[in-house]
Length: 492
Ligand SMILES: [Zn+2]
Ligand SMILES: [Zn+2]
Ligand SMILES: [Zn+2]
Ligand SMILES: [Zn+2]
Image 1 (cartoon, rainbow, N blue to C red):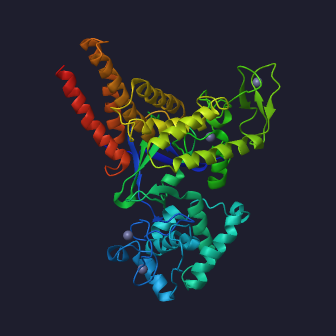
Image 2 (cartoon, helix red, strand yellow):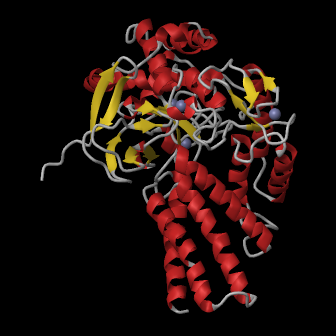
Image 3 (cartoon, helix red, strand yellow):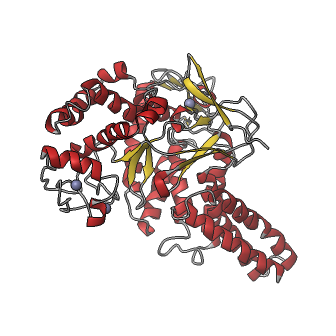
């Protein structure tokens, strides 16, 4: 049997280059894998080891003086080429007072690595990298352009004495390739870095993706899979934003980072396809909902859906309000997982209950965090939780899963993780009821079928993740728990 390529690269006016399915694809089917042309620190990052990307403090390379955690990392293949450049030009990492603060000094590293990758494999560069989008004209009007000229272009060409190896235009092109195409990935240690995958970058965006990507720790290989069954010739869509964000925030992020205005069916629908991720409650009447009159225009007015209600507000006012609440959410996310993290989130839900639709992105994100905290932190471990809290965990998991069915259908990491979270309270609730003599053994067996299915689906979805990643580890546990539950069901 001839194994035909699973995808095709096409081109049009709207998307530029894009990918389509070249055959009917099954849910979970591997479409392609890709290796990064380069991996390195994100812009404006705090100092991290240029070998393994762990945060470092006062630890530098003995040859070039740039941040490095160990002798082993000093000699790692990713650091040696830049180490040569820095050592020869005698450019040192400037001493800093606070090693946890963001520093623009490392901004030049990933561009330099991309330039060195070009020297090393000019064939791949010409075949895969040169054609990548840079949006140079649009980028010239942004404040980052000037900063990049100082911190990257002039720095590499003048300070690092690379004038004879790379032209100014080439360095500018490299900055553009990185800004437009790099994806954020977790390093082996779980710290956030970035990488450029030439084939992955061709996939166009939709806020309702039909493919997913997984980064493997070894070589940072990326695997692209079908999230749902896909028919031949259908466009392959990846999501480049946070899937639970509301339309105003997603579209702003896509315009900022990817230079386009998303007009996907989810963005175009004021109710976000009935998920209500952007919907507010009206305070001027009883049942009214506040929706955008045109979600594809960020300036458009927002109005109450009730005929007799006059309430309206402007797009910019809505954006400002979201910004304030999102900053509050950021503070919540910075809390260590513990009882306070649960209690403050519950208080925030209460505070905004009359403002947002119960499935609004803001409340849903808090509920997503709570679905993972209940049963896992001090004073709230799963065997300590009273039935009412077990039910709350179930409610939150189901809410997320229901929303994902619409905006990210099929097998996604988030769905796998939520199914795993859902199994435990379902199991405990059934066992508690049996223990209290409220249900028969037959009924108990019946009730345990759902958590069993949750575990089976979670194990299937998460087994595609790197075994060392948090999701991969959860997938492994799901598999073991499924076998245990099966055994105990058989012995009932
Ligand atoms: Zn290291
Ligand atoms: Zn070095
Ligand atoms: Zn969209
Ligand atoms: Zn109203």
